Amino acid sequence: MDSLKILVVDDESRMRKLVRDFLVKKDYIVLEAADGSEAIDVFFDNKDIALVILDVMMPGMDGWEVCRRIREYSRVPIIMLTAKSDERDELLGFDLGVDEYITKPFSPKILVARVEAILRRTGCVDADEVIEAGAIRISKAAHQVTIDGEPVELSFKEFELLTYFAENQGIALPREKILNNVWNYDYYGDARTIDTHVKKLRSKLGKYGEYIQTIWGLGYKFEVKPL
Image 1 (cartoon, rainbow, N blue to C red):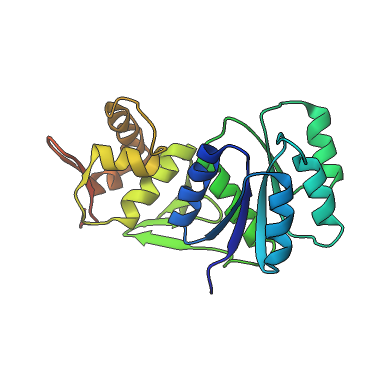
Image 2: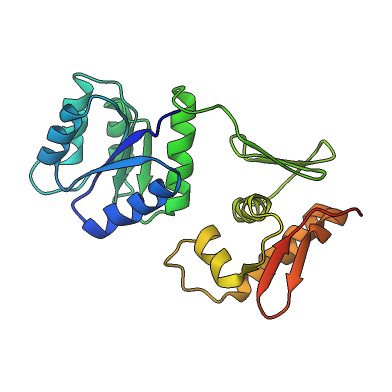
């Protein structure tokens, strides 16, 4: 399937770059607009945009007006971003046909997960992607892990960490690299937070927690081996 186009509209260049970087990692084509007027021009110049991420508070034409104009001609999925946490705003967004409503600040990884969920729902991407590692089966679409066919309850971050390990089987992963890929790339927390999450993840995986090997002085390596 060809890469899908996503339009990101925000008057803050730093925010556009943050969102763009995470979407590009997932092989999306990202178009940008710095204000409402530019967003309308870009949208109607590109008839194959699969989804719009739209900031509410912008100078001139705000996000609500952009949404109204797009909805006059298109049912393209729209995710609204706002610094407000007002129920009335959220209800207005849904009245205008907004698909998701996310309040700033937000995790870029959560935003990407919402993007992928909406695109799956609208039939733009495959319904599921499954990773298998020995007895462990990871369904990225369902956000579910099973071991020997039995479901395992993981937190969001534990799921992301296990998925990253499983996608990089046999590779020695430094703690800093794990932080950059599982947490936001601008996350400045102590790398030892990984050790805490790994400890919990190992416990939940039972005997298969041994798949996660500690590399002293560096980080971890995930490797399927006979138990």
